[in-house]
Length: 157
Image (cartoon, rainbow, N blue to C red; front, side, top):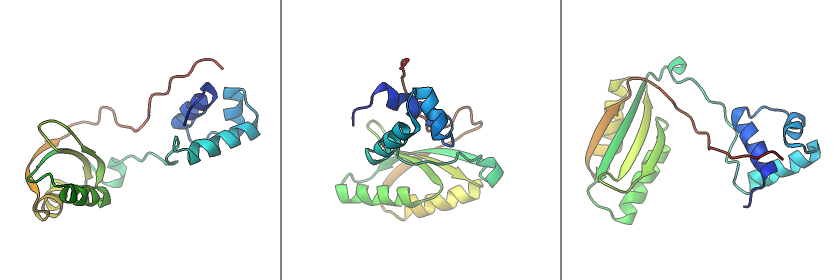
């Protein structure tokens, strides 16, 4: 999908606040509301917009611990890696999962209520899989910056 500057203006505005009315988006991008509506539909169907979501405060929902985990696998057979990916993706406490190059094979970011919950998840996700050789746990002491925004370069339309 090829994005023009109008699309980039719309995407940048939606990342700030997905509840912005289409009429206001049109003013920002110098487009009619109908043109904004058509572009948003194309951006969604083309995959540029993956979903609309609210960003929640994990601490207010009882998730006070952020844990980053580096994982080495025992065997890199495709079927075993695919099974691990599926288990990690299905776990609600796993916020992010990356299959990476380098010393480690996976990097996961967990949100957990307690260290006890994290220990239980390690048993479920790492020990029962039979394919985790080792893992390293990093406990975040402070949330300095979190988010899922993508930098969008825009020029005046």
